[in-house]
Image (cartoon, rainbow, N blue to C red; front, side, top):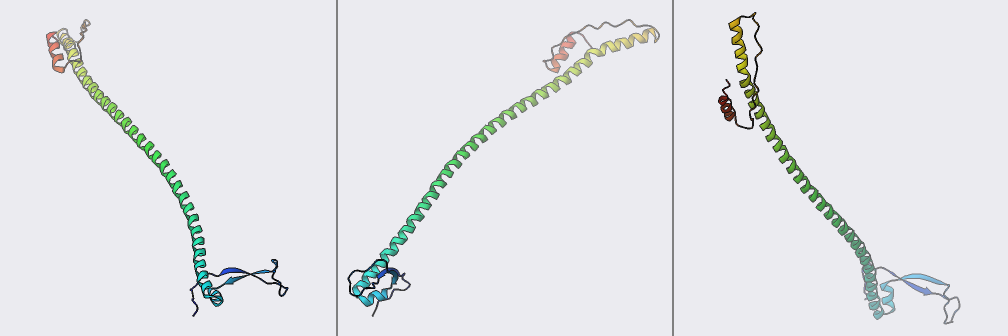
Length: 188
């Protein structure tokens, strides 16, 4: 019984036909391509059928190997492109991380400067309040003295101009120290 292989490809075979009968020479210009089948080869010879089956497997493996090599080259190209993209992305990530660190350091410096300005603003406001208190203390006596003199002489009398002596007080002291200095100078 012949060996049957399901869905095997048919291999082309060159069959040369000659117009001359009996000559051993076959002209090459009258070639036709026909496919060989396992059945036809087995009919001719059982050992040739086995050889034909083996040859079909070898040819299929050769064709598959060529396809696989082509696919491997494509995959290797894709891998090398992906690796180069990965290295570029790694460089970009490193640059972004460095920029982030620089930004954080810049922000920390600005926050520190802002805190220093806030502190200086608070100190300036406190100094302004103390200065206002000091000014109210130093000018309260001449105003009272002027009112007292007006009360003695009457509203129509001319009051001689009051001479105010200029006193310099260091403001960097605390309010208690300024008041103590003012009391030492006997200013009410």
